[in-house]
Length: 138
Image 1: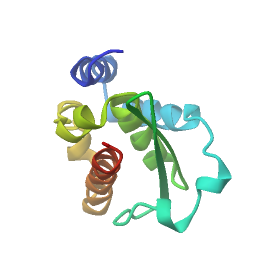
Image 2 (image 1 turned 120 degrees about the vertical axis):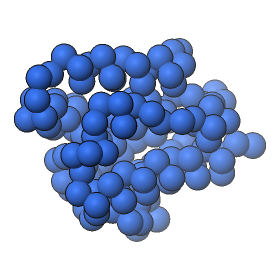
Image 3 (image 1 turned 30 degrees about the horizontal axis):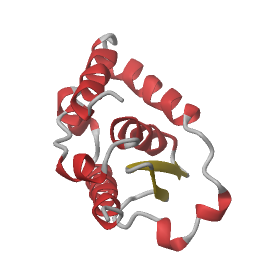
Image 4 (image 1 turned 30 degrees about the vertical axis):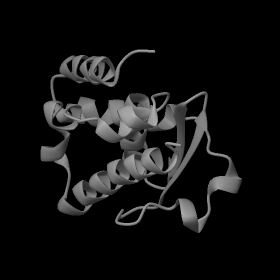
């Protein structure tokens, strides 16, 4: 499995291929569309991320000492963002996830493009993924 840093660098390279933010938004939307469907049994109140403008459900489970994340959102852009986070953090150890520094978000310019409420939602998504990793680290 590739390290979190290698995956982040791949995402930065992916986004550098686009000339403007309209193309980057389209790419994010495609990533959201490609996100595997979340089992409807996981679309429960306990899996909703608090602090998001839109509804985002996040499920985490531990398999073979790594955490597997699945998610869904009712907002297409948010779905693309959580797809990126899953690509970076899923299939890594709880410790790697908890200690990760997610610099790709700034590097691709995403933080500059988000409204304050969406930026808060992004922080909430990352925080929840790290909380799950810590909780499942046993």
